[in-house]
Length: 220
Image (cartoon, rainbow, N blue to C red; front, side):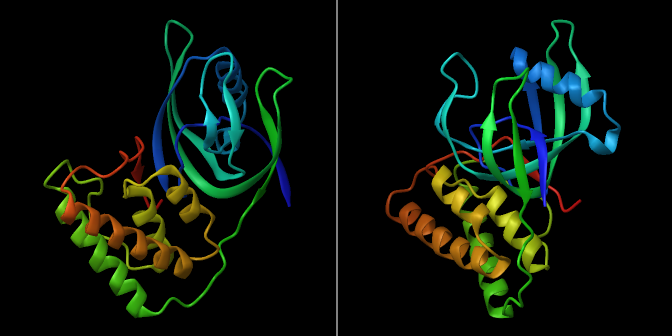
């Protein structure tokens, strides 16, 4: 089943469960927010995919986009005196985008919600992922604040999204985690990526290659 959504490409890969503050100031996205705020609260949805090449703003804008992203819901909105908006949004679903159309007041696209494949994830995989992420957090504390607060989820799917969202990784790696078909595959990928990060940090102590997006993860 497809749905037509306003689209807001970002220089970040987002994951279901993530909450994100957004400052909206460009005309086309202000028009998008104005349109959404006229809808019922439960219908204030738009899509976002990561920018592969290009920029969020400016005349040139995004040159190339990833197709898999997230469906976002506006949970808070504040209109500023200059016409810009400060938003709080929640990623509620994973989506695959068809061709984006930019001829109107704001970009739109037909999107398909991608349901997570339901699989039984071995407890050994879950335990390994929890253990290596805990070790990674401890190593990371030597360089920066902890990207994750609270206790790790026990549910494999929630755990896979939590680790993916809060681990600072290069965009292609984060995109691959987002596109993984199920929690077991995603946790396996995360284990390999975290092991590689820990090895690199042990050889050449430094900050990870990228900073985590301006996000926090919530199971809501």
